[in-house]
Image 1 (cartoon, rainbow, N blue to C red):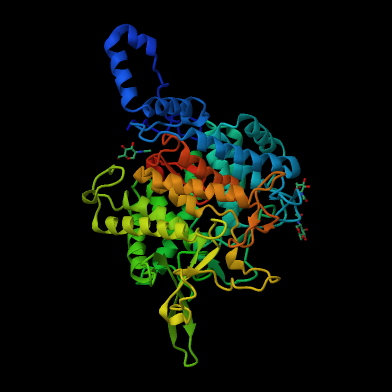
Image 2: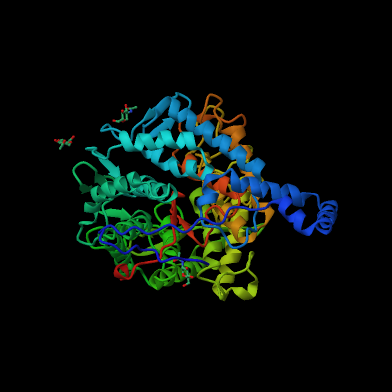
Length: 587
Ligand SMILES: *[C@@H]1O[C@H](CO)[C@@H](O)[C@H](O)[C@H]1NC(C)=O
Ligand SMILES: *[C@@H]1O[C@H](CO)[C@@H](O)[C@H](O)[C@H]1NC(C)=O
Ligand SMILES: *[C@@H]1O[C@H](CO)[C@@H](O)[C@H](O)[C@H]1NC(C)=O
């Protein structure tokens, strides 16, 4: 691996890292070679073609994938391009992205959120938009090489976007979508300063949220007044995932600006959490922002906890495997997750994750109830476990693709296997009438009454889904264009090279096309994955363009686009480079 020193010397206080040299251009001139080598090579090529006609189409596809894609040219290349693009499918994803973006741009450009059926936009607050959808989509356009769409989006950011909004915004969502989107746009646009300026401005407006007795950030922030705000529904609490999913973004900003304040604030959160962790190693979903202690509350891998686990691993990877504290926290957490939350279903031994819910009894005692409920959100975890296995669980670096058993530690082998199996389970939750997975799946257990009822043949079910015709389906049966399964398929494909992951991704994409696509433009959530034709809901979440379509694109693209040894993707799928940490920022 070539790696240049990342920091310029100079008087500029803002020391900016240099990008890596682009890989050499693809240089294959058949004529040149035939002149030198003549007939023998033509004969050999002829025989090769006779034996395997695909080698030429593959080579051409690889070449096309390489040359017609802006980002794969400017991204650092892998030493050996193992994975060729599936140009046909990759381009179908680009068509889908344009179907989503152009409708938004036509109907709602600049508004935070988009409603594709009514053709309207809305803002998160009455004070006006903050670029929620535009900024979330920019790096996907850069990766896909959509130059015209990109330049219009950039113009909007440069001329129309402002964070001077006197209203309350969620700290975590604003960070992962807007700050994360600006940082990756900065990196992928070859350091277009506009994005860094906006990122600094936004982060400076967010920073006051960390001014609490514990250092845990407030759930909300007023961006104009630069003040942290409690969450009125949980005035004393903050969520584990929300406070522990700001670190990749704030750390990268410190490295870009040379100003360590962002990193210090974000890192203090991790120290507080580490101190507060209970011996079992799991994070409950709430903490008290005054004392910094964990609060008696559910423990799970789903909402309010998910990306705490994701970022433990990714912080270690982002710091180029130097911050050992995150590796240790991650290893402890994975042991605990295996001990307490990973279960197998009763009939076909499907691996799934359950939740532990505390219950207070009349005599004051507390017990933990195991609830076999798996959010779609948890489906990120299969790919994350596989990524962790090949890094924190690896005995050699880099491991083979796929890793050989002897290259992994015992816990690495365990995590790999659980990850592979969890992805299989997540794919099983796609065996619905639409081929799309529900928001929440429950797994049958012997004690739940219906657990062994032969009328429910599957190992999992959608709770409350047996409704009468005119009732609205339960919340659990929705699919809101979530990315987590395809996120795992992307990682699994890159780490194994197995075509089945591409095939599964294609099935999911086709299900989205069939059941969520709005003919006039955009994609909509559907309210019941088991109903055909689907009933749509008038909302296209911003993560459709920032995550779902990006991961699908990456699955079919050449693996030189965003190689996993050079990038971590934030929890909103914004790619950030793995850092060569300057010594003054090391704790
Ligand atoms: C959203 O905010 C922007 C900026 O203030 C404004 O121009 C736009 O009209 C707002 N959209 C809606 C639907 O209110
Ligand atoms: C911000 O909004 C609040 C409540 O809507 C208002 O009372 C206050 O004056 C506003 N502050 C500024 C600086 O606009
Ligand atoms: C990460 O560390 C490895 C081994 O020390 C080094 O070869 C590589 O260049 C580093 N990568 C980055 C992005 O700094």
